[in-house]
Length: 121
Figure 1 (tube, rainbow, N blue to C red):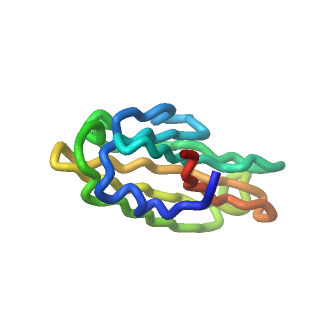
Figure 2 (spheres, rainbow, N blue to C red; figure 1 turned 90 degrees about the horizontal axis):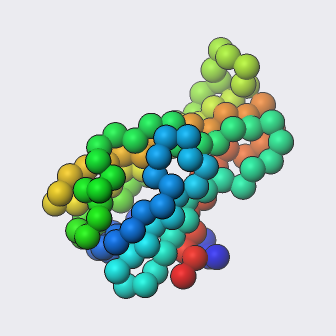
């Protein structure tokens, strides 16, 4: 695997998506040009990183050119059991519709809450 920017999906056509459901800890995108990308987190101690919510219909991303691929993050210190949390939103657009995949990353503040996006082929 190699590091990639989420914006690398711009102009690509996704033909298959695996794992794009609430509660998932990884999502894989397969593109028509043979490339594929993983979105995931390397789990360590005292943290939870997973897909919290998906807004839109993921099938709108299939077989259409990706016109927008934007990543937005926000961090705060919640009042619950965790000392740190990060919300990361991955926003997609095609001519068929918009989809936002929302990841929630919570930890005790000592571990990474980063969602990785890497090219796997």
